[in-house]
Length: 476
Image (cartoon, rainbow, N blue to C red; front, side, top):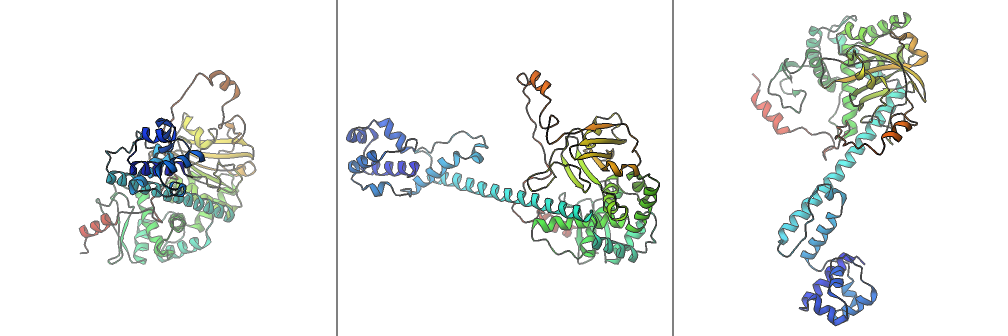
């Protein structure tokens, strides 16, 4: 028996007989306050009471015990009562709403229907968030197994460069990029009125790729945006039907862009020479091919295991230690969720990606060895000064392979015992004993990489804005 439904059925039959609580109480020898608690679902009726009120109201016990609300109004009141008991509703911090007689049925219907929609939407977002975590975990596992090297994408990038007339040494010139666009049938135009939610818009009818103007997008970033747009055609990507496909295509597009800007053959030869000289450094790759430090570091992981036999790790994290992107095949113990995903997790405060923000030369190269439960690891970390908010970019390897890198002679040494021991998950015992009962801190809402998504299978773009943009830019 559902006490709330029973209470409403009892109230319905009592009022149908024209009795007050006091009058019904007098008939069965029970106090009115007790009967009020039963009708409100706050007190469960005993079998003896059920028989007594059934006799007094001239209804059968079966009628009182039916599991359906007796009226539409009762159904709405029950739904509202149950909704207000749920954590999702309570998180709204609204005062308790008593569905008194003055609250119209339509108002209750609106509240209950809106809450049902909120509950459904939250459920869908939770499922989408789970899908994101699983998709990221699968991509990380695949990258680890392949050494973060994608042979098919490398081949597509090499073929595209050949078509653009790239000779195979040094940075890819702007002329090469324009020829590459022409090879796929496109020109590039800058537009100051691009919708904020898009990186580029491609007009498939006239072969135009619209990107933000130079004052909104730096030259290196503009090259990446154009190449990631071309990747759809170079890699023959269909429209994604779910988030996993969307994410896989985004990763492939980013890989294609970096493989064009840092071509495999000359980059691998350059790294091999530095490897022999024991002078590997991300900044050299960055300068040679005129790319961002982050792209150079990530590209290093694409080539290091495949061509040099070097295991590596890569981390992009913010000042609070939140991981935005990470990869490892050298055994570095990264924090992870139950599915194996690392994005959105918090790094140990002793890792170089967090320690760099406390360095007096925060925008220099921060070299560090870190002892962990999985062994000792070396890393170089850099915070690009020209990007805000500031993120730390870390490239590293295990102790045995650190001898091939510039900065291997650093004396900076840290110890991380995460996830166990007195490290980051819990404070040292001495500090806890001194301050545990004397301090209270109010937390700040943390913005994570992996957030709840909309109910669509892939992140949505306002197509009205896109189509209105195209109306403003008709073909000449």
